[in-house]
Amino acid sequence: MDNQIFEKLDSINVTLNAGGMNTINIVLAFVMFGVALGIKPRMFVEVFRKPKSVILGMCSQLILLPLLTFGLTLLLGKSINWSIALGMILVASCPGGNISNFMSSLSKANVELSVSLTAISTALCVLMTPFNFWLYGNLYLHFASVQADVPQLVIPLWDVFKTIVILLGIPLVLGILTSHFLPRVAEKLKKPFQWISIVFFLVMVVLSFWSNRVAFLQCIQYIFLIVLVHNLLALLTGFTVGTAFKVPKADRRTLTIETGIQNSGLGLALLLGTSIFAGLPPHGGMLVITAWWGVWHIVSGLTVSSLFLLSDKKRKA
Image (cartoon, rainbow, N blue to C red; front, side, top):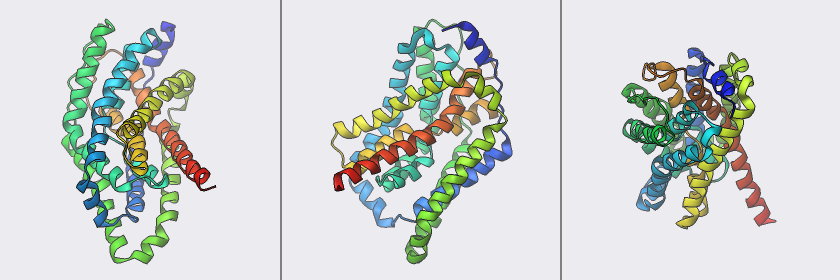
C-alpha cells in the first residue's frame, strides 16, 4: 500500500460534537427501553439456569475476537499501517454495543441473552479492554516490527458506570416494569417504539459525523473495505462458535450479533476524550477505523437481522 495514503489517513483529525454524542447516548437509552418492553423477569432466570450460551458469548467476544483480530492484522501485512492495526485491535477489545440488543430483538434472537452478554462484557471491559489492547497491540508492534509504543489504557470508571446504569440498567428496569405492570401498553409501544428509536439513532449518527464528512470521503473506499472484512470476521466468529457448540437457533443468532457489534463509542471516547494516546505519533487511522465501525456495524447488524428473518420466511414457505 502507498505510504502516502497512510500519511494522509494519519493526518486526519476527527472531532466529534459533544452535544451530538450525548444525544446519541440518550437515544441509545430509548432503544434499550423499547427492547426491554418485551422482556419478562422470568426470562433472565432461564438464561442463567442454562449458562452455556452466556459462557460461549463471553469467550467469543472477549477472547476469540481480539485474538482473531490480531491474526487478521498480521495477515493484512503491508496493506495496513500500525495505526489502522491498533484501531482494529482497540475496537475488538471494546465490549458489545447496546444497539445489539435491538438487533437481537429485530432478528428474533434471544434478547435476554443479548442483554446479559452486553451487561457482562460492559462490566468486564474495565479489565478486559485495556488488557486485550495492551497484549495484542504490543504483539502486533513486535511481530510487525513497528517502532512505536502502545500506551497503557486506563478506562474511566465513571464512563463505565454511566454505560451500565444510565444507558443499560435504568432503561432496562423501566421497560421490564412497564411490561410487567402495564402489559397492554408495553405491547402497543414495543414495535413502533423500537423502529422510531432506531431511525433517530441513525439520524443522530449521521449528524454527529457530518462535520467529518470530508475526512471520511478522503479514505472511505479503503477504510470501508478494512472495516467490512473485520466486521465480517466478528460476525462469523459468533456464528461459528454458536454452530460448533450446537446452541439453540435463537442463541446462535444472539452470539453472532453480540460478537459483531462492538461499543466503538467507548473506543472513540478513549481516543478523543482522554490523553491516553497523546504520546503516539499522528494516528488518524485509529480514529477513522473506530468511527467508521460505529456507522458500519449498524448497517451490518440490520443486514444480518434481515437475513435471519428471511431464512425464517423461507422455512415457513
